[in-house]
Length: 302
Length: 165
Image (tube, rainbow over all chains, first blue to last red; front, side):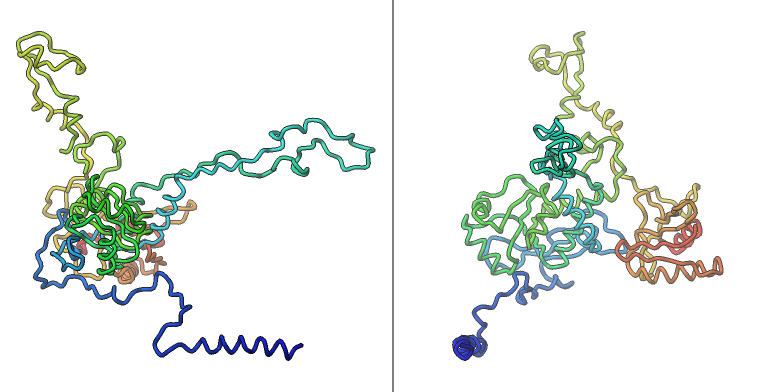
């Protein structure tokens, strides 16, 4: 019986043993690569050198501190699938080059998940369960344990003693400056990890989704792309192209948030978005504490 | 001055020309049709806009050397040191004192950029010359702050401003 089982299993073991010698250079068929494996072909995009002949399409309007210098990045176009960069753009170091605070990113992401959360779990306490006002049997002499009500938490069908009570809200607000710093840190991370791309405008030649996918694949932008523009209205072509795609999403610049930036691998900004973001985010570094809510008019609100 | 045009329209000041009907409610039909002597003008709105609060902290006026209050402006070019200490939003040096447990005195230096350990070495050396004792310090590399045991805010502020921060 033992010799029979060895013979049966031996055949299976030999088959499995022979399958672990693949052909020279071919990957085994059951190999599973992790999704976040760094693609070496992505790493070949250095920042623009100092003597680059391409024009500087955008300078920083805000004052850059004396001890820092603006960062430069390529400005591309979406018109052709494999076009060369059109020029360079300057980025403010206080928005795109802040120190990498993953604790602030964690706080802001956690806040974004939880401040909207209302948990509707509710259990009835012994006083709320129907019935149980009468003492089930007399205190002494019946031989059974003493009880006062049939709905106490000891009983089957009784109330829950320490269960969830009613809709609970997990609403809290992080300070405004922490949320602003979270946005700056997220943008800096995307910039540092080479996942931030600047585009002059969002006009594409066809409303075809495959064009966008081919463009992203050709330029090695990543798996998922978040496209940000200032205006509420996007061009028709890119709206239609991105509407069918799950991993390419369009948002207006006021909707930019840390969760979306972390969820998508690449972030694409337009030149107007850069100006908008720098205005709004740098204002917080030099503003007064609010005398009255910022919803009401101020003289020089950004 | 980026006030909304709706606000301007709501607060538009309507001149009464020769007629005595100066106060008209905004919900009435346009005064141009009713009384051609009324003129709508928005030039006087400047006086309202002047009263609205600013939201940005202004840059301090140019001082040659220390101001009468004792405030010193930062140097024109940042000093050639491996670290940099930015000014606070009110243009002051970011050195603060802290008192916890009723008797624990600490001094906190915030807004440090660059090599914070070089700053810690320089601060320790400065305090060694000042007090003759080796003061315990704590460097927080995540928040880029430096904590020192004891109250040394005035000395550190004058030392940092003499360096040009």
